[in-house]
Length: 266
Image (cartoon, rainbow, N blue to C red; front, side, top):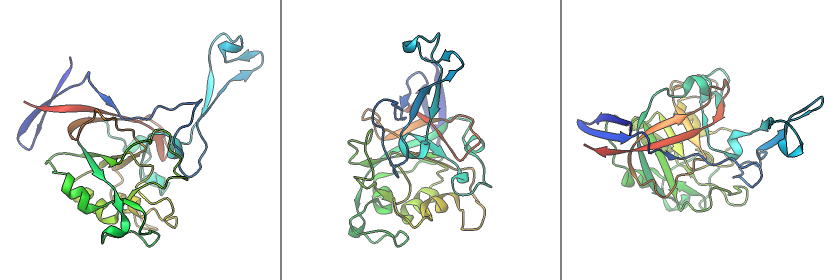
């Protein structure tokens, strides 16, 4: 066993680094993956060049494939502020290079019309949202925690859901403000977006998170957002170390593999 020890709020914890919990959706090139915005599904094709065929089923000497991915629409992915402005840091530059103290919090969604919180005018009373009120009632913050994993309830069917048929919940502006006020720089969601499916093309919650005004520059370009995570039932609410694994791609977003390691009080 490889053990890590952490001191948070004057309390010692340990984590077994051989017992990670995977939060990444499996990318299936043969079956249905989640679908958001109707973006293309992942595609894998054998390379063919000259007499070479990169498919052993077709007599090739080895398997060699070309992968076509649209991370924002069908898989667990992590975004940087470059998602909204190409002048900002790429995901390779913004992705953390260390383990992060993290909390996992489950929050029940509610109809927008049941509360008095806000969005940007494109909302409807029937929309399901994560509110600041619900977040505050379920989340007891701990000093030194840098990352938050949010599980939205109910959480069935997310591995293959088509969000054009079942509209996705999203966060209110006030919920984003609570997250920032509590010192969170890296946010992991089991939702396809921080924002509403139709938001007028503004992505207001993303802009609040990165402190990125229209026409301006991000004041918090070091932050990341991970969307379409799949949080298994064995991952209970509590305190963890987060290993946010992101390939070194110089673009706005990349497929990612968040791993959680439960923290146990010493």
